[in-house]
Every structure is written in C-alpha cells, then in structure tokens.
Image (cartoon, one colour):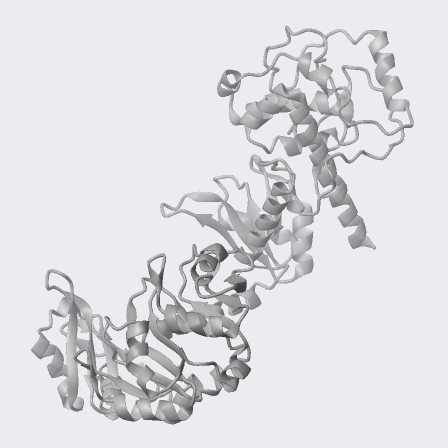
Length: 599
C-alpha cells in the first residue's frame, strides 16, 4: 500500500471517502460494520431526501486516520454490499475540480457486460483515477457509456491515445475528452441543425416491405441504415428509422416527404430524437400551454361550482351567473357517456365579478340543490391545501372531520367568549336550524355560511320520554307536546343568563341519553334528504343547548359528514363534544380571518 502524499491529502481531505451506488436500504450501521474493518471510523453519514428521508444512494465515511481511509479505498472499492458493488473515491468538497473537466474522459459504445470495476481496471494503468462510473438505467443495466476522471490531464490524454478505437469485449469503443453540453453545442452544433437520423411514422396501412421503404429515401442520398420496427409476430408497427451518411440528405428527405401521401398514408417524417430530448421538448410545450391557460384564466376569475342538479347544462349555468358580470366561459363537466358529473367551472372577465358571484351564489338553491361556489384552484394548490389539512389532522385533529374549511386551527378545548344573554325560549320554540330547507328567504352571513332568516317553529322536545322514536314528518308539521316543567325551564334560563365562561358541552350527556338512538335500519328506509333531516333533528337540540348562537351552523357542518359517523357521534357524547369543539374553533378562525381582511 502506497503512502498518501501531501498533494492527495491536501486536495481530498485528510481521511474522508465518498461511497456511491448504494442500495436504498443501506444504513449507517451497515456501512460502519463494513468500513470498521479498515480502521477506526470517526463518523458516517448516509445522505437522504429532506422530505421523504429516503436514501439518495451515497454516503460519506470519515476515518480517524488518513492511512485507514486509503487502505479502505485500495482494498474495498467495488466490493459487494447487500448484493451491489459500492463505488469509493476521495471526498472532494470543492466541486471546481469536477466541473473544470481537467482529466475527465468520456467513453461510449461499451458492451453491456462492462461494469464500474471492469472500466476501472482497464483505465487504471494510465494513472491515478479519482472517479470511474458506467451510466445505468433504473434497472441498473448499462447504457453503453461511462466516465473516467483522472488525477492529471496527462493521464487522460494517454488513455484517449491508447484506448480510442480499440476493441473492448469485441466492441470498438470511442474514448475522448469529456465536453459539457454547452461545449458540444458550440463544437458540433445543435442536434436540431446537424442530424443524419430521421424518424418516419403513420405507414401501418401501407404494408411497406424493407425494399419499398428504403426506396422512398434512396433518391436523397447514401443511406447507412434503414429499418421498419415490427412486433413479435413480424407485423409492422407503422414506424421506422432511416440513417443517412450526410446531414444534407437527411434534411432534404424531411423537407420533401413530411406530409407526403404514399399508398393512402400521410407520412410523418422528422429528425429522430432521443427519449430524454423528446420528453424535455414535450415538457416545455406542456409548460407553455399551462402558462397560456393561466394567463387566460388568471387567478381570482375562475370559479368552481359543484352540487349541480342533473338538468343544468352549460347554457343554464351561464344564465344563472351572467347577472354578475361578463362570462368568458361556462362549462359543466361530463363523463364519457355525456352524463353530468355534478360540477363545473365559470370564468369571469374580472376578479371583482367573480368575487360578487361567489358571495351571492354560494348556498343558493338552483332547481333543487344548494350550490357550492368557490374560487377554482390549480391542482398543485389543491394538493398543498389537502396536505396542510392532513398535517393538521396528524398533529391531533380527529380524522374525517369534513367541516374544517381552513388550515388555521384553534385548540379543540377553545371556550367561547361570554355572549349577551338571549331571551329564553320555551322548549317548543327554538330557532329554525340552517339545515331545514324551506322556501324562506336565504341570506349570506359575513362568515360565508348560508343561514335561514331566524323564525320560530314548533318542534318536539327530546327530553320527555324515550317513546319519541317515530321519524318526524318531513314537512315539519309535528304534534305539540307538553312544555318542560318549570324547574327545568328555570334551570335553562339560569344557565344562559350567567355571565361566566361555560363548557360548551356540559348538558350533552343528558340530552343524548334521553333520546332513543336512530338506527342504520331506520335511515335505510328514508330518502337521502330525509336521512339528513332525521339526523339534523336529533343533532340540533343537543347542540342548541350548548351553543345557542351557533347551533344552526354547527349542525350544518356536522351533517356534511358521513351518516355512519353521525350515528356514532349520537351514541358517544364525548365524540360529539369533540366535533362541536372543532366546529367552534373553525368558525372562530374563519371570523378572525374575515375581520383581518376588513382591516
């Protein structure tokens, strides 16, 4: 083993090695077990993705002594670890040496069997190698080219002189100085301007033979190769490649034959592109279209509308929203059979018009359903919003709470500030909850929640007897029952008149226990609308006892949840308590946000 000279230690660090080509499951412990055989290890760090924490496939090993690091480099390079050879080199903190291109050699036309170690053994005779790598795909199969970085340019020049044009595993290889993409374009020209290989498609119906196919291109110049791509049965796939000796011949063939009709087929003839180049071109085209679309539908003018009735079409959607401004487009989304999906988009010419439409139309009943109207979000923004909501849930919020509208959260044990005492209503006179849809007037509240204008209706008490199990009439015309005893009325009046902070859910346990539970079988016998009505009529009086000011809104929020979970809440007062607290927190956060925006 040679002694480390001053140049090596000065350039590459005293005792630090780079270890690449690692399997994703390799950990620091695996590497410590491996490298501690060469000498005392000071530290090991596997580099990982900052978000997923998944290994990036390389690591740094810091030895306590430089001699141990060189011993590991000489004896352990390309050894197998978990079935895959690892690649070692001195850690080079300064990237200027790599980017300078000094001593860097490019090799192509390599046989698939040549790996990193074989390439290293072939070129190590010309000088000290800093790095050696064969490019591979995602399946770890060689792409047929690689790179060797020598310590000196003299060693690189000698390798180019001796190996270029020689046979490696019966294949003639090309060895030359490594050039960056910019240098290649300056020296050789852009591939789009200097090409000899062309791509031809759209001739599946023509049934060309190899001779007929080549005969189309013979008039333009000398052909190096010509091939029609075929499937396993030998049938033409309808595309092929033609390689000319000169660029001028290839260009002339593209100009003359592209769009030409041959045997009833309109040919497409263009410069052949590599897969990554084609993908980059398509990506650029997609981004350009995306930006054009964003400029057309600028932020704040495109609205998302859902819960649309099946009878609403594009024309009806346009008519409903046209009163708020100039509409540039209105579209209902449909499936492959032409059936509406229940949602669509309306685009206005200005943000002010869109804002007015959201304010006026959100919650309005069109045909038979209340609309949900909001500003449309891009897919990326929607993903970020959902990810933020998920992060909130994983940090303590119960899952599947569908009423959460904002990512800002108030703690679930938030207590409502003391409100002014409300006039006491008898048991059979309570405000109409917002989830009861009648023909009464609708108005938009500052918080964005649609509510019925308060009115008084007769509803049965839920605290009298468990015999009240029959489903109420959907028309809300229900028989009156006797009022609560005076003692209970006095108790409620006292509770609401006390000027103290109260726990929102103090009376819920008694309320839930006093009601006979709704079963899944009872719900299955009702229509979807009546199901929500039944559940709402159970929830509202319970919530109204604890949150008289917000009972309608909270009930509407909870009714957006799955019916099964609502039934579970009615059976579990603590679960219902937590959901109501969450709803209160969301409403308070929303009110605070609106207040901040008005400042």
